[in-house]
Image (cartoon, rainbow, N blue to C red; front, side, top):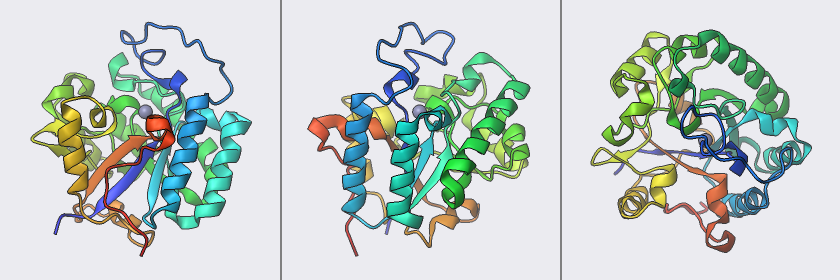
Length: 266
Ligand SMILES: [Zn+2]
C-alpha cells in the first residue's frame, strides 16, 4: 500500500500572488482588487473547501498567511471552521505577507521579525489548533531560514519542492542542502510529493500537461492522516507523502473542484 498522506491547503488570496507582491522580479502588476477584504474568489474557494471538508473525515492542515488575520472577514471564517471541524483542522504558518524570502537574499533579522509577528497572530487566532509548522510562500526557501525557524520554535518545514524544474527557488542551493539545514537545526523537512522529479502540487495541478501527471499521482496516494495520526509529521523516522493545493483552487469549476483524492467518510 502507498505511504500515508498529509493533506495541506494554502490560504493565499489573489492579492498575495507573486505577480502582485513579494518577489523582486516576478511582482510587476498592481493588484486591482480591494485590499483589506477577501476577494470574491477566495470566498467562493472557502465555501468549496468547507463543502469538501464535510465530504470526508481526514485531517487537514491549512497554512495561513497571517496578514489575513488582521481582517475581520477572514478571522471569523477561520474561527467558525476551527470550531466546526475541531481537531481535524490545524493551522500552520505561511508567512505574514507571502514574501518570497529566498528570492531576496539572506535576511535573518527580517525573517525573524516577520516570523515572530506571524506566529503570535496565528497563536492568538488559532489557539490549540496552531502547529509549529512552516511553509515558505511560493516555495522560496533557503538554508539560512532553518536557524530562524528553529529559534521561533518551529518543528516542521514543508517548503521543499524537490524538482529540478523549480531549483532556482532555493537561492543557488540544492534542495538537499535546504533539507540538511532543517535537520541540523532540529526541524523535520516534509518535501512536497513529486512524480518523475516533476512538481505535482499547487499550480502543477492545473498546468497542462503537468496536470495529467499531477492528478494521476494524487489519485495514487495512500490514506490521509486522521486527527490522531497528524503528529506523525513531526516524527522524522516516519515517511509519508505531502500534498497541497490552494483555497482559491476550490473556486474552480464554478466552485465544484475538489482535490483528486480517494477520500471518504468512515
Ligand atoms: Zn502561497
